[in-house]
Length: 162
Ligand SMILES: [Zn+2]
Image (cartoon, rainbow, N blue to C red):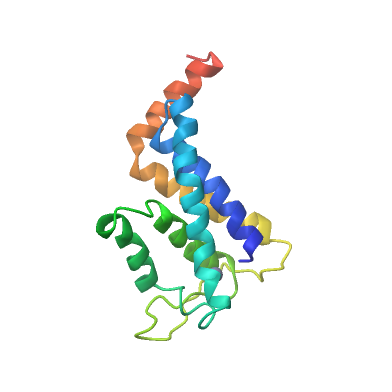
C-alpha cells in the first residue's frame, strides 16, 4: 500500500483501538485515542523505511522487525502501541497489494502474498484499505468483547435509545 493508505489505516485504526480500550465515550476515550494514535501512526510508517535503507518489502517487512518493536515496551518501557502500527502495515501490504511481505526475512527471502491484493495505484486501493481496517477492528473487538458490550451500552445511552 502507498503512504496515504497506511496513514488513513493508522488514523482509523487508532480511533477504533482508542475507543475499544476506553469505551466510556467520555473525556477518557479522547485521551485513549490520543495515547495510541501517534504510536500507531509511527508504527504504520516505519516498515517503509526500507524503501530508503535495505530492500523494500524485505528489510523491515518481517516478523523479526515486529518482534523487536513489540519487545521495546517490555525491555525499555517505551514505544507502547507502535507494534500495532507495524502489524497493521504488514496486513495492509499483505491483503491489500499485489506484492506481499517477507515474513521470515532474513532467514528466508520468501515473499508471502495474498490473492486479495490490488495494485497500489488502483481505484480499489481506498476500498481495500477500508476493508482491511474494518477486518482489523473486528479482531480488536473480538479480543475485548466486554469493552465492546460496554461501548454499545454507552452509545445507546448517549443516543437516548436505552
Ligand atoms: Zn510496506
